[in-house]
Image (cartoon, rainbow, N blue to C red; front, side, top):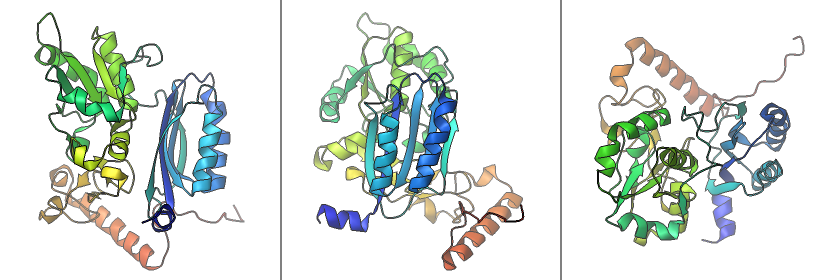
Length: 323
């Protein structure tokens, strides 16, 4: 299949991006950026903070190019890290540009990836690093992400939030690194690279020197490394309606539980506790019957809207002339 036919079959361009930089006044950047995204018909979420910008957006090729060009013109963003993929349909319901204290929340205010960070490793060199017996490999993502796929031999911290990572590392430091004079290398990875920027900066602040991270994250690896040479097993969870992607960033096989937002495999969907739009085995005991009735009605309304050819979530209503 040619690129032109690929683009026809998958007309939506998805851009995952981030840049650590210093914005003196993120609020002043919010309005112009939001206005541009909306005028271009782009959807997704962009986060602005004093430490930079982070997010994923989707739209036409021209729309994404315009937004990326705008962000690259912001202070310190000329080298903006962007990973592109394609989708058959718009994977987001609306456009949000939000102000945050951190563009990825670790809860460690003194950690500054601009001051100190681990060694970047290109996807082409990643296999050699993680195959080294003197390297320990840590997945810095959340437990539900790891469940969909990870690198062979990776340690799963089983954290529910990135905020939990510092406490987990401190609690397991001796177990991970031992007491020897020559500690192992520590290699870490995440979806797009941003969490590893902070986690390697955190480990450096804890006195760990031999710290490495996958440049561009799993998405970059799945795009650049041929499947036949890959040490990745499973699929990669992404935070939009694609749910997961595989090698070559092809759409994955997982669905999303709309009650708890966890990825749901084909096997998970065979559970008697799974009901589309209502529950999955992982969250069934976390919700009440009343919750499930609400979700069931919401799902019914979504199906009815689809039959009418209308959006349900993210629908834009015309302005009330009498308001």
